[in-house]
Length: 206
Length: 313
Image (cartoon, rainbow over the protein chains, first blue to last red):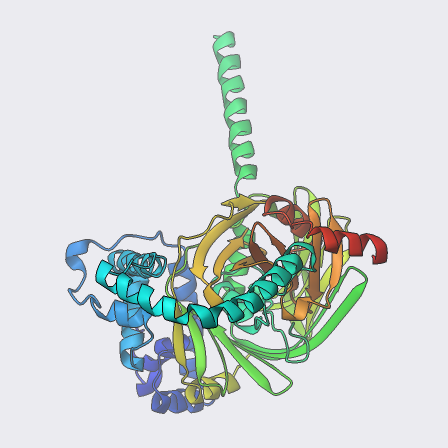
């Protein structure tokens, strides 16, 4: 959002746009909040800016030509992103960049898919000389294992019977609050019934 | 000449009919405008919300501060800040941020059937009646000056009131949210877009708008029709999840589901095809039933469970 033309009487008027976008620094925020409470010009500017924002929403979306985009792609930061290893400034930069860069969003998806694929790869068989060595160790342990195996066999049989005939097992104590937060974050960028904001108070949340 | 004139009149009438039918096939622009303006409104107030479903009723009063696209909701000492694809709870230092999202269009089944001037909380308002296929689905009270939605009613498929929300104290100038935004500098976890999802693209009149990686290795599909919305989380493994273990069950033609009601949302959980599903959203009950009918069906459980349920209910 472009910043509005500065009011003749107020030096803080320029910050009103950033204030609506939630982009003010802590010091600036104090200044604007205090100033808006006492300056009629800036309140008028505030409402004018909201009208401009509403008008801008009616404009069609245009793709930014590739040659106009700055060559500041996050590159290796995307991988660190997925690993949760970015500091706050890098994190903010990547998020804002992903907002407009289709290429980087695609790269991020590919990285994520690759990580998923790697996790799903089967384990490799060890070389033959290691297998022979392992067999010798296995033989030495066999006598001890026979006792253990009998116990494991009984337990496995019990587990099998329970899986077939027993009641449904619980998936776990999954906390639903992260699911709710993620749903709410997505709802927050739509203009449907989130005009009536939803909230699950502590005592009401499932 | 007379025949030519008749043909011209006939052609004009046909064209007019085509234009009218085309106009009715697209979503109501005025309703979209009201909703867009309300989403960007600035105000503060107390909001009471009441919801009734399946013989249960939930009620809450929440403090709301709405400044542009940012919203702060406060209840029972907890403050949640939402907006711009981000969500965080004040004081925790943590939040989450969506990497990307797609625009949503208002479904053509909705139209602003009637708009009327009224007066609420000492303010001039416009009451918009929203019809869905010629049946009243909702009424929304929009403040004329701030464009804020001061109240709403949502009706189910039988025309009964399903959810009611009213602002009971209104101030056009939000202030506290800015202090919270100043003090609240959480570290955001990025939620990346995922394509590993097998849920249908369109169900019950709702479009699947986006798919994300969800918590605990789940996938998150977000559906919306521009007015209501819901999310479906698919988690590996079958079985009841924490709060749903003791939840009420509801029997639908598509199977048995466990559900929890909150003042603003319905939560539904079921298991099938090796996965556990959790749905959360503000959609009305008849929409929910249509949606569940087109999602993966609940499994009937193993032989022991069915026998147990058959004997003890």
